[in-house]
Amino acid sequence: MAQKVFVVEGRQFRTESDYACAKRDKEIIDKLREKTDGQDRAQLEALRKALRGGEYKFMTLLGRDFLDEVEMQLKKMPVSDGRERKAGRNRTGKKNGQVRSEKQAGATKGRKQNSQRNVSREATKQDKARRTETADRTVSGKDDQEINKIVQEELRKREKRRRLTIVLCSVAAACCLGYFAVYSYYDYRTQSAYKRMSELKEKAAGTSSAASGMQNAAGTPLYTLDNEEKSREVLEEYQNLLIRYKRLIGWVKIDNTKIDYPVMQTVDNEYYLDHNMEQKYDKNGTIFMDKDCDVLKPSTNYILYGHHMKNGQMFGGLDLYKDKAYYDEHPYISFDTIYEKGTYQIMYVFRSKVYKEDEIAFKYYQFIDANGEVEFESYMKEMAEMSLYDTGVTAQFGDQLLTLSTCDYQETDGRFVVVAKKISGG
Image 1 (spheres, rainbow, N blue to C red):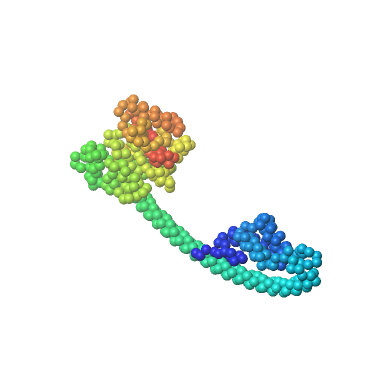
Image 2 (spheres, rainbow, N blue to C red):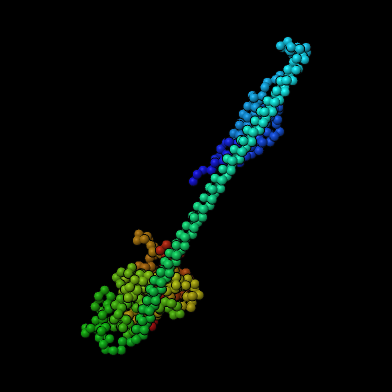
C-alpha cells in the first residue's frame, strides 16, 4: 500500500504528527503575515530580528522558510538612510529645493514601483495559495481513496475470517456429533451384551447336553486357568455364559449402584482396557481380574480393575466411597467366581498410585498372595494406615480378600482402591 504524503506550503510531510505540526506553524506564519506590512522596512526588520531570536517557536521547516521569505523581501527593498548631512546642500552640492523636487519625483516613482510590486506579490501569493489548496485537495482525495481501500480490505478480511470460523465450527460440530454417535453405538452395543449375559446368567444349565458340553468324560471342566487340569464344577448360572465367553472368570455387583458386571481374565492386563467381553474394541473396556490371580488355588487377594468412567459406568462410581456415609449405605460387595459365590465386607478405602519399579513404597497391586501370617499382617497394617476412615472391619491370615481398583485423577497415575474380606459364600 502506498505511503500517505501531506503537503503544506510546498513542503511534504509523511506522518500525520508532522502534518499536524506543519499546520500549526502555518497558522502562526499566516497571522504574522497579516500583522506585518510587507512594504514597511522597519516592521520587516523587527520581524526578522524576532524570528532570528527565536521569539516564535516553529516545529517544522516552515519557520525557516518564512525567515528566508522575510529576508528576501528586505533585500528587494531600496536602501534609504533618511538623513541629510547638511541643511543647505546635499553631498552632490545641489540646493535643498532641487533635492526636495528630486526626492518627490523619486518618491512618486518609488510608490508606483512599490504598488506594482505589491500587485505582483499579491498575485504570487494568490497563485501559491491556489497551488497549495490544489495540492491539499489532491492529497485529501488520495487520502480518501487510501481510506476506502483500507476499509474494503478490512471488510474482506473480516468476511474471510467469518467464513473460516463457520467452516471450523461446522467441522468441530461434525466431529463432536461423529464422536457422540460412535460412543453411543459402543455404549448401546456393550449394554446390550451385558443384558444378554444377565439373561443367560439367570438360566440354569438344566440339560444333560449343557452339562456334557462343560465337562468331558474325565470330569475336567472346559475352563481352567493356565490350562491346569483341575476338576471343579462350574456354577450353573455361569455354564451357559462360558460356552460363549471363554475368558469369563466371575461377576461383581454392589447393590443399588451401577456396578453389576461380568469379570474377565486373560494373560495380558492391558487387553481389557479397550476391549469388551466379546473381544471387540470398546473404549469403556471391561472389568477384569489381575492376570496373576488364581480362582482355583485360590489367591489370597483377588484384584479387579475397571475404568473410572464419567458417566458412572464400570468403576466410575467407586470413588463415592471416599465419604463414610456412602460406605455405611453400601458396605458389602457381591463377587462370584465361576466356581463359587461370595459376599465381601469392605475394610479399607484409600488413595494410592502406580509407582516406578525402583520406588520403595507399598504397592497394593502387587499384594496377591501372602507368604505367611507376618507378611499378611504387614499388608493389613499398610492399608489401615492409608485408609480414609476406620470401618471397624479387620481381617486375619487365611481370609479371602477382594480389591477393586480404578483411576483417581487427583494426581498423575493416581488410583482409588476399595479392599474387602469374604464373610460368606453367598
